[in-house]
Length: 96
Image 1 (cartoon, rainbow, N blue to C red):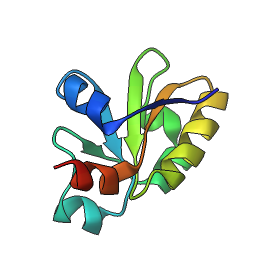
Image 2: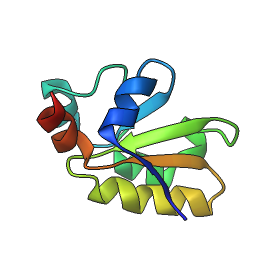
Image 3: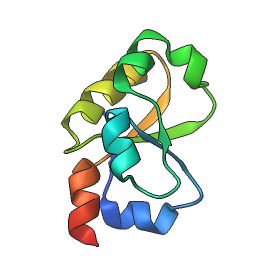
């Protein structure tokens, strides 16, 4: 089962977790969730070991939370500790 967190929970955890934005570089550079790191989805699919380790937990988001669900399911099957941020960046914007 895929682990997901809400934007409200994310706000409580901000600064203590590893947040990864999988959107395009243009969207990330335009704006993003504070403390998030940018790693495009295609790079994570091709080279997860380059960016992730099996011990840490990672929280992923995209624009609406759909692509990040797909990525999390894939990475979870590979053995990574991953969590989806429900609603993605749009949910973040709506909550502020």
